[in-house]
Image (tube, rainbow, N blue to C red; front, side, top):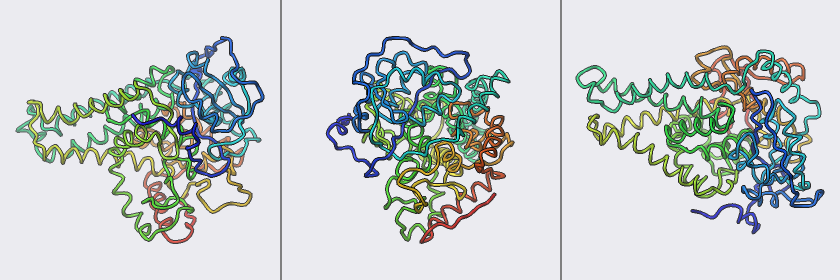
Length: 515
């Protein structure tokens, strides 16, 4: 087990990637109140471990990243919530992810419909923070995000709907599971279909493709919602739903996904050197996605060589879990908080479990007739199908000629190293929607075609997005915020390729707008 990052922080070895004061990325607190009437709030005594009014650097806050000593910062104030961990209605796991970080933007987006968490948090204040780990967004002085939250909350109250209702996800994934089982049986040469069309190579190839899609769909639906606390109203729902889909079925790791996607990407969307989904260095990456990356001759061809490589995404996730999140204690620019023995054991067990049913069972069971060569070929077909299905759905939403890249483009007037837009506006500018009102596309991409809605309200179930997106668009018009919606996936894909092509050209990328 490698040494954890708190030791490095304490000895001053942790590197500030910006070399200056910047604002911290982080995570989550959920009161469990969405979809219920009143959240349960603890009233236990709150001892202050430091005198109120004391100042702390972000590095000092970062040292308090365990259950026994858990500090967070929100809007420049430092809070010691160590005594609150067991009382948190949103569960313990999400607080441990948030530990030692600035959670300002996550705190707001994970409590969009209630002010009570702010009232509770105030009891734990111990001082102020004087520096930041990552860039800061502009303050929302206009009340734009508050207006969005009010309007969307009014919709749920008026229609008496649970924003986290898990039932739509459950019945959809039951259907996917049946198709996955059938395709798994055919793909791996089940003896019961020998002598029929289902036992032919063409049928097995089709089944491998279908299984690859079925492996991706639960990740886009149940796993994704669970990672944002949007699948049911309790931590047990999120843990079971997320890990069944991610760890046991797909062989990847939910903890790794939490660090990359929830802590990093969702807070600092498209922010260069803060979003783990972007290159984490200015030179040497095979992708050039922002203007501040040094140009290399190979980038002229990235619109041709990158899309085929997207197929290895599923395999990359499984390796990255071990090598980065659990191995080096980082996920791109995101530092991983100390991992418990239980998390290590869970990661190891689920990977062995996945390898057992996915690889060993069809190869060793007498119920299947398949050799190593046939199995390996069809296994790779499924894996690449999963990778393509996930990657293309992810890439078209943020790596696009329609998106902004804060701190990755040439400096704009007035930019001082922080982000010139407020958080909610930046989420809209760095995301692109497509194919609204197309239920087939919405199902196949796990509602990622409503990317703006997802980033503004991550704790709302994706099955509500088509209904609340028009509400968000209305508020955007009132505040003169441009909400981009492309007509279909093909147009969104072309915008993705256009971005790769223009960034691959030497010099600044051209502005390409497609709708």
